[in-house]
Amino acid sequence: MGADHYFTSSPGSEAARRTIRVRLAGREVEVVTAAGVFSPEHLDDGTRILLDTVPAPPVDGHLLDLGSGWGPIALSLALRSPEATVWAVDVNERALDLVRRNAARLGISNVNAALPADVPDDLTFATIWSNPPIRVGKQELHAMLRHWLPRLDADATAWLVVAKHLGAESLQRWLADELGLDVERAATSKGFRVLAASGRAD
Image (cartoon, rainbow, N blue to C red; front, side, top):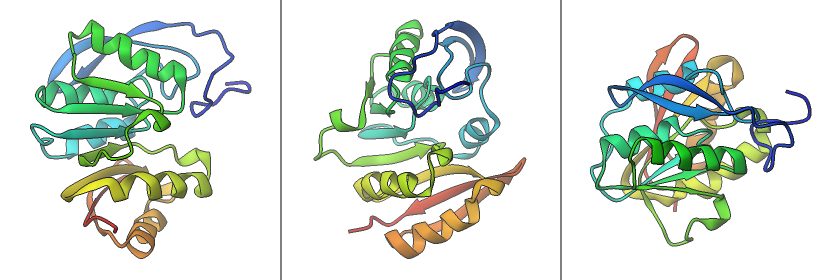
């Protein structure tokens, strides 16, 4: 990967865009990925497990994909809830460009691909789905979750998928102890944990 990571804001590597086929929201689709973003060659196991596990998203309101990458979660949310407004948030400009390209390819008009600073401060979310960027380090991860999870609507749930060996159990404890959320392990598969966190931290 060289000096670039998927959480690099402006990857310096050649984009080397490619088209892959994936299954999203029950349909086979073609999407564009590129170097310098997370899992450019296929839909990664963690995201697949998240998408296969979570219940249907709310039909309307603002829905957040936190750490969108090339967009599998945001695109799935948009396809399943066409009346909702989906926010695909990432620090990686190349990833956001891919989300926009993929939404256009699939005829999706209800996705906003945005840098964190470009999301209006007063928005709250009817759900948050995320395969969070664990490898940014604990300090940055916790800061990110402290910023976004308190923006859940009062009756909403955040769904996070985390590999067990990357700290799923400690993150579950932290969400409960530090953010005051009710956290349950909703699913376990292939070394991943899907965490359901609810109860807005005020």
